[in-house]
Amino acid sequence: MSGHSKWSTIKHKKAALDAKRGKSWSKLGRAIMMAAKTGGGNVNDNPRLRLAIDKAKSDNMPKDTIAKAIKKGTGELEGGNYEDVLYEGYGPGGVAMMCQAVTDNRNRTGAEIKKIFELRGGNLGSSNCVAFQFHQKGVIVVASDTATEDQMMEIALEAGADDVTSSETIHEVVTAPDAFQGVKDAIVAAGIEPVSAELSMIAENEITLDLSAARKALKLVDALEDQDDVDAVYSNFDIPDDVMAVLAKE
Figure 1 (cartoon, rainbow, N blue to C red):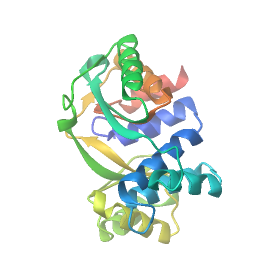
Figure 2 (figure 1 turned 180 degrees about the horizontal axis):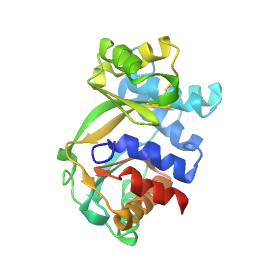
Figure 3 (figure 1 turned 60 degrees about the vertical axis):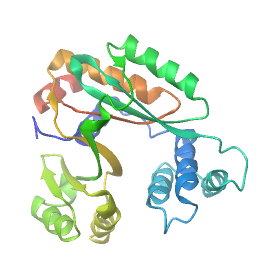
């Protein structure tokens, strides 16, 4: 998949490098709150909430904690005074980067993210400086040893997926946002458990990075993801498999 893999696949490769735990419960809880705040507390009518709860359950968040987060989002409990904020900028090598954050203090979060960009060789930009390059898509990643490429093509495309791309390690299924849940359900119904499934922002065009630029870009992504308020980081860079193999040994 070198040269044309999606950012979601880069994140999957990257996970093998750092072996990080999943998002903290505080981040997952805020994601649930914002989903309930913007779309209501009924998972059947709120795909964003359903996805946020699925992620929380996969990280073993207790049911009562999930329930409290929903109630905070709907206003039944106090403590849901958060808002979605999108920060945009450029990283090493001129790559485009977006940070989706959930914060109760926009000024504090903006200042911290700006500092992270500057310390890691990037710069925070103005609104829509890079967002126009991205489109929301559903992305489902399946381990290649759980299904053949033909099986994934048949299941996903029949369920309404836009595309299926396969490598030695994974199958990546890309869908329109409104088709995401149906495709995911079809894959699970076939007895295949996804490695990850999320609504992501996919760039129209990608920049392929060499070893030096890849090191710097991944360090910036790590630093942004470690910021307490950042929920997701999106970018338009690709790291070829041979470069990723070198990084994996470092």
